[in-house]
Image (cartoon, rainbow, N blue to C red; front, side):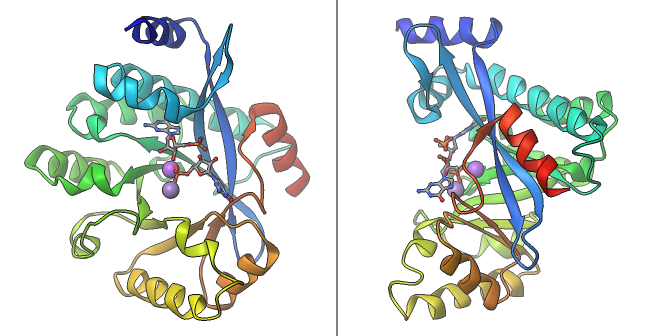
Length: 257
Ligand code: G
Ligand code: G
Ligand code: NA
Ligand code: MN
């Protein structure tokens, strides 16, 4: 279809942009990282959201090229923030979304290693967000890629935890460090009193697996405070900041340091 050709051209001609959303340490409110979220700045249609073109990229194999662009751009951005006196912070980390197809590619691990080396960044400064569905088919190649990424030292995070029908067994088996809990669980905090107990139980499952929880979809001060009160470490959501273009996010970072 026409959109495939347009998207290929978009990647090559610089029409894709990354927006950045803060991830915050709940106990202090400090920005500890950001998630890079891709948008397509289309010359005619304006800003197109990823749910409109990521599935197309995945279905056509363009996702590998798109993923490489995201990786390079995000890592380059992190280097610029590290070099900028207004935004230097040592343990600030970049999170990128990785699709199932990336794990199926043997070059992916090398791409990640090279991108970090070229910008002289420590592997821990990059966290890869993997959806449950990406990990869950759990074949030989996925396991091999995950183990190699783990050995490389980049952070590995399960995204949208609890959204699908997957089992919890893999939390103990996969070499991941963090779990980002699907935003549906935060939505009812502050409305339904029994929800806090439920969320605390999820938090306990994550903690007992030796993992850190990241809570997304935080939109109010009450939700942030409720999560903090039960010991949740990190949060993300409109309450702390929307996904922003480079310049605006840089200003948000600079205000904080
Ligand atoms: O950006 P938005 O807030 O609309 O993101 C919607 C979804 O699009 C995200 O949850 C994520 O799954 C997907 N997405 C966003 N950016 C990327 C990206 O760079 N790569 C991949 N594979 N998916 C992305
Ligand atoms: O986990 P995932 O990659 O799907 O998360 C990113 C998506 O979540 C993006 O589409 C982003 O715009 C959206 N998002 C981020 N914070 C919030 C929030 O507080 N509320 C809602 N409804 N969506 C959010
Ligand atoms: Na994500
Ligand atoms: Mn999510």
